[in-house]
Image (cartoon, rainbow over all chains, first blue to last red; front, side, top):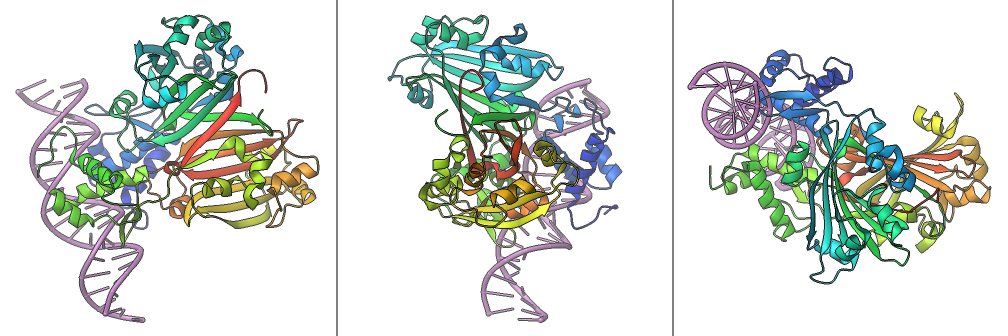
Length: 259
Length: 259
DNA sequence: TCTTATTTGTTCGTATGTATT
DNA sequence: GAATACATACGAACAAATAAG
């Protein structure tokens, strides 16, 4: 046995102890945990039990496990995603950054970075096509981005716009100018007036798993963001994927009526 | 080995097969999965491997595991939580129910049920006291509820109101009347005009674990809901806890300005 | 109530595979 | 290639919860 008691399973007790160690500074952010054989000897349990405990911490986002190298304590604090503020012009343009993401990250003293991994005319997924009112065969602009906070991957975003609108607004290039896509849309009279978001949790795709360094037991937030025009049409369909432990989502709205 | 191939681990392949079986009707909602020894023989793997696969499905909310009895396929579909609609008077009063929760559940053809487990004057948690502007020692009304959809536990809610306001509004009793607490608050001129919600994922408390039937690896949504008055004061601090797989959260808001 | 069979939960020792240094 | 570190898998065993008698 080795000192660990019965009512709570050993791997959960080990996880509790390691969690305490992380929160109390014994294992500071960025530092490695002892190796699993080490911990097994230290706690007097088998390595399988240690591994299971570490999987729990991994699921909580407390550690990042690097196969062949070791396990390190994560260092990026939770990022507050202000859904309302994100889509106000002031927030998009402030600080010279290209959007509210930059602001959210810099506020934490971290360095934001955005990589565009795809910028193309494509056949949109059926869900996106339906929302955007695209006929069969009508193309859409896809803008797929990877976003980082101090080199930690924190967000995957895939945005779809009707190609004709994207071309007219001049947002088919990498740099969409000050204020980004929304400001260009506003300039041609197609600025969205209302937004909706659907948030759910799901298991990551294998692409997301490797990008975020997730285990298969961890889940991600999936946010379906839709930008609406005054006449009820949608101009943008966007799919955001976020590691759950990395974000706090903030929403605000007024009480009655249709706002 | 037994027919399962290398690049993807066996327990994940087993999970994939079981997931397919559930989605394709081989194991319909409410039906039991074969026992773990059975599945071990069937797939030609050890029972530990089967157990691990089932834990994955459990984490996704596809099955409910009952120790000593077996594993059954869950039957409650994802519930759409419309944060905006929830706090409109029409939604609160419609259908004769006592709130938007009833509506959301009935829409799915399920039977809503609410149990009040605590209704008291208490010292609020520090976070709640700070938001509500309560001095040290000032009491708050706590209204703690368990909510069910066709007897499946789907939501835990703990709401805090300043006691003096709660008494004045007449909401210190179990039945708060048509439209609920918000309608009573409105009647004394303290109807909230704005709401905010902070959504994050965290591991469940042991209370939540047993109430929702979660494993330790599953997480829950925690929603901090605050109801604001026109003068910037808060009248309500509420903590909602939801099993992640059970809900889709919907938000809507207008584009510019302070709305 | 007690007993027994069934079912899931946990743990170990051992072994092998894969990734990194 | 060798050493180190994490990932997966098996067989075996026991614990804990449940159900049937």
